[in-house]
Structures are given as C-alpha cells and as structure tokens.
Image (cartoon, rainbow, N blue to C red; front, side, top):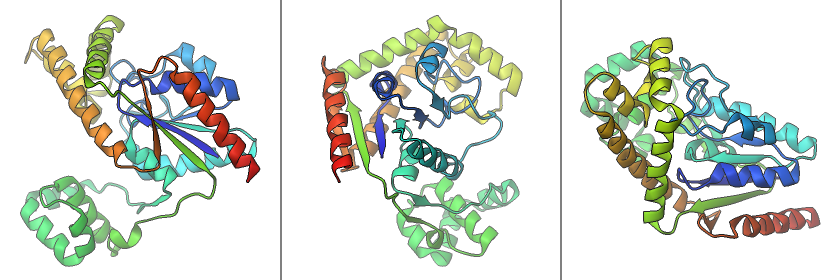
Length: 303
C-alpha cells in the first residue's frame, strides 16, 4: 500500500507526514521538484536535518542542480523504491506538492524516455509557436488537441519526441496504475486569508534563515544563469542582488508569486476525485488523519 499526502505550499504536509510516519516506522518519498536538488534549501522549505533524522527521506537534496530531473526519471526511481519498502512490510509515504511527480506514481504514467535535445529545441523555437503548433496538428492531432495553442513548452516537447523517435508522443503515453491500494490525503486551507498569512510568515522566515546568503552562494557556485535560480523565491532574490529591485520588493514579489503558485496547486489537486481532503487548520488534524490511515490499513489487510 501507499499513502499520499499532498496539497498546496504552506499547508503543513511535511510536518504531518513526519508525525504519522514515525508512528508507523515508515519512510517518506519527497514529491517536490525543487527539494530534490542539493543546496536549494531555504526558498524551497526543504526539511531540516533534525526532521531528516526523525524519519528516513528519499529525493531530498540528492540531485545535482545542473542536471534536470524529469518526471520520467523521478518515476523510474520512485517505483522500485516503493516496491522495496512494501516488500519489507513498510508503508511508504509520498509527500509533496508537485502534482506531476505524484501523478506519475499513483497513475503509473507511461512517458517517452527522450532526453532533451537542445539543438532541436532551438530550431523549433526559431520557427515560432504558431508554425510549431501547425506542424503538431499535422503530425500528432491527438496531442495537439490536448495542448493549448499558446503553450510552446509542451508543443516543442511533443515535436521533439516525434522527431527523435519517429513516433508521436500521444502513442507513447498512457496510464498503468499500480495494483497496490493507495490512500490520497489532501491538506487544504479553507480560509485563504490564513494561507496568505502562512505564506507571508514563511517568506519572513526565509529572510531570517539566510535566504539572501543562500542565493549568493548558489549564484557563485553554479552561475547566475542556472535555470533553478529563475524559479520561485530565487528569481526575486536574484533581482535584488543584481540591483534591479529593493529587498522589500523582492519579499513582496515572492509573497505574491507564492500565493499564485498555491492557487495553481489547489486547482490541480482539487480536480482529482480520489483525494480525501482535510482542513490544515483543524486543531485535531493529526488525530483525524491518523484515524483515517488506521482504517485504511485495517480495510486493506481485511481484503
């Protein structure tokens, strides 16, 4: 069996998962597309060394920031790990807010194993999105139907797969859900003003923990053009360090962008009917979730 704890940023997923995993002597697979990279800790709210000592974690600070970890790579490493833990009679926890990471596991997504071809992508980009989308409509109308006409990233990826493999991306995709039972628990802040306050508090904590120094270190070590430094929390601090905006503006922009990101996460997860929702502000949240997990385990063993 597998237990998923998901939801938007700042809803307390990690803390809840650690508390329950301790009770079950379980291990946690992080499903966060940035916490997986080494040295990116503060602006990603990566679990602390103290928390890591409480429960074994996987996919936390394990990858080189210069090498992009794709969804397919994550899935390829996560599934055997889940199988191993289950064989050891442990219940793995899949915890995070990266929807595609979670979906790749719980739905068993089939994805083409095609590495990025920068030369091909550059050529396609130079053609322009309008022409690329027209080509996609001709070679893979099924994929074009699922991709917005103004989505160059997915359009170029679909064409890249087609030109590299000679087969359409839609013919190489599908869902093959695992056979083991899965309980998906979602944490949500029903009062958005409370979530907004949490985001503001977290951003201030980032300052207190050394957010500015972390970004200086990352820029010096990996170069300021590193793609990860263009992401939430890092892009804004880079703007400050490069003299483009004030520190106050960097903080404000981070808060606004984090709120927008949380809104997108909520929309993604709310569209998944299998998720059972719990209010992250519930004073007895831990007890409620623990009770639900106990019932899930009992029902699973009965069948």
